Image 1: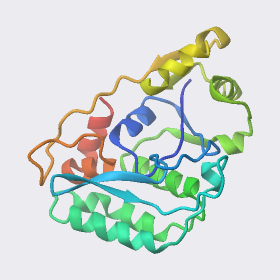
Image 2: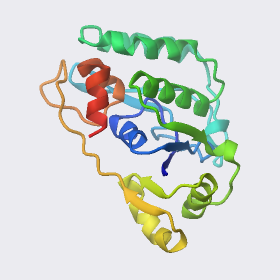
Image 3: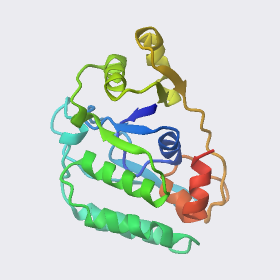
Image 4: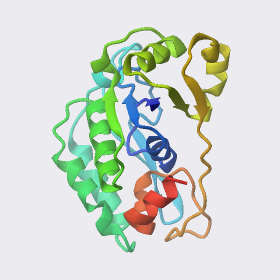
Length: 227
């Protein structure tokens, strides 16, 4: 059984969903430490050929604060984000394919960042017909740090193969992951490829998956992330 473990981020890019398509079970590391200035509460969209950050305002009250303990400072941002997305993608051919995501964003009743991010990611996965099973590390209830914790989670769910983003390769090697676990370690090999992108003369990579869906539609988006 293949598994990936990732922190829940806000409206992630295509590579995040590529990882989801490669596994049977995807574990949200929702009780990891919140990192200010990270993708936990923000992402990028296309604004007439320029990258525009959309950020969820949150209360960062202590250094060890977890993602699932991070609360919103207000709810005004929801309507602002929806308006920004609507304006930036108003003339895109597949705007209708992200309409449900805007509804999810507005109707979401979450009171913390982890719940919001997970709800949106699962909504996008459903839109793209991804059938991966989702779990949350906070519900599994396994402590520890770095590779040791990952191994304990993988053992708990009976995983035989761990798919990791290549960005974690160095610390997994430093921690001797393969010596400590019988779970096979595989690194993700996803490179963003240019796709038809409206309102820009130069391809902007690593934008939120909203950009991909609005430009090519949900069916082509699934093919893109499954590569």
